[in-house]
Amino acid sequence: MKISFAKTADRFPRLLARIVEQDKLPTDLPVTVVQGAEASRFTGKTGQVFETFLDDKGAVVRLALAGVGATNGDTRPANLERAGAALAAKYLTSGETVLVLDLGKSGLDARETAAVLTGIRLRSWRWDAYRTKLKDEQKPSLEDVIVIHAPEGAEAAWEIEEAVCRGVEFTRELVSEPANVIYPQSFVERCRERLQGTGTEIEVLDEDEMRELGMGALLGVSQGSHHEGKLLVMKWMGGKPKDKPTVFVGKGVTFDTGGISIKPAAGMEDMKWDMGGAGAVAGAMLALAGRKAKANVIGVCGLVENMPDGKAQRPGDIVTTMSGQTVEVINTDAEGRLVLCDALTWVQKEFKPETVVDLATLTGAMIIALGMEHGGLFSNSDDLADKLLSAGKSSGDKLWRFPLSPAYDKLIESQIADMKNVGPRWGGSITAAQYLQRYIENGVNWAHCDIAGMVWADKPGATWDKGATGYGPRLIDTFVRDNCE
Image 1 (cartoon, helix red, strand yellow):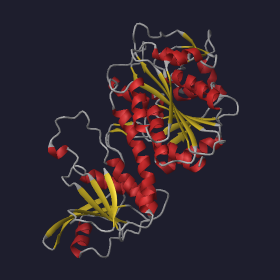
Image 2 (cartoon, helix red, strand yellow; image 1 turned 60 degrees about the horizontal axis):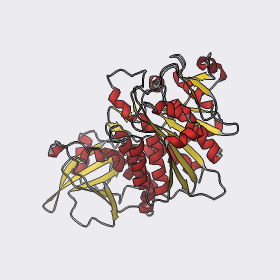
Image 3 (cartoon, rainbow, N blue to C red; image 1 turned 180 degrees about the vertical axis):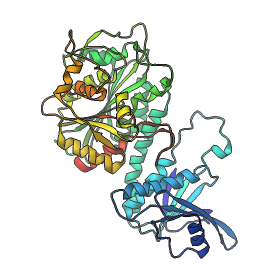
Image 4 (cartoon, helix red, strand yellow; image 1 turned 90 degrees about the horizontal axis):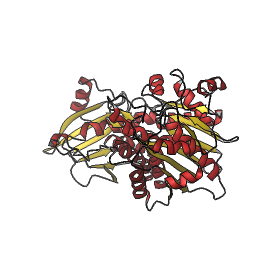
């Protein structure tokens, strides 16, 4: 979707859209439009769209009014995005190729304009790379949005948000691709391709290098796969040279069969998105580099496949992590924490950060607890937790905090190793977080985001279609804006 700005439309608009506040229909509209909107019970509520047709000197104009709800309130940015998204959803496959968005009497400022455009851009994204038999009426037709009469500063504000949208779209792309296309090596190459020329430094550790470092937990997950595991490191150093970096770590299990503890066949195809945490980190790094964030940020992705080959690790195996702690593998389907624990140890030793945040589609228990509305948040720092909760609320990538407590440690005690990789069914998300906490060094502020229910959707949302939601980059970007720049 191309979005551009102009003083006026350089050609006659076939499709003209305007933004409408709730219960405040523009006074310059023809009486037939006002009466038609009222007859249709259009009041400008958030996400409402009213469509009519006008005769302008013999030419037909398709006029759309998009509602943004009430003027004030904490939900204002989200409402503006929903208004833009509603326009995109209605006209993406309408046959129209250009939408002219007239903001002349909208009363929006630059940031509010960028929010509307964010909604349009994100809701218009689709992944049709493998669909060869779409009917014409199913194919996206809307290619251009031309914004006219925009407020001062709107184009500059959109340039920043457009970079974030590109990051969200990259995350969606990675999560949408099938596992025969995206596996550890191809994930790395896709990131190299997208981040090329952005100023982001990329480093990759292969299995031999990880073996020398003692990453027995991560390699234990990978050992049953034809595709070798990788540790991908992306460095954006846009802050002051002496500032310690903030580190984000993503779980990147590019396909999760469950290993020897194999999952049921029904629904296993969904496990291509078990790299959603790594996808979020990669998308966030593209967003931060794209808008030239004034912060030092490092993104690390632990990339593996979890396959049930004859070489795969077995339930009952004991692995030694990079930290030196030993783990009894009770269930090979609790593999994400094995990947993360070695990645977390490595980033702390390598970069000496003050703050580390990991994102992972870690537990089904999180979906049971929170459904598809919030990601779960665990942290050893109240201050860090509050900042992430605030970033989640502002960005729309919502989080809900869960407890950490030594009382749960007994659930992952092992008789023959330092710990088990999984506890009983109850408190499953908490025991996973308790496990990860054992790899966090003293003095490091750490948070774990279990986003299992957030990276994929079976039905359309406000700013996404069915499929990959793009959860994560906006959360990270907002956190960096608010706390690191």
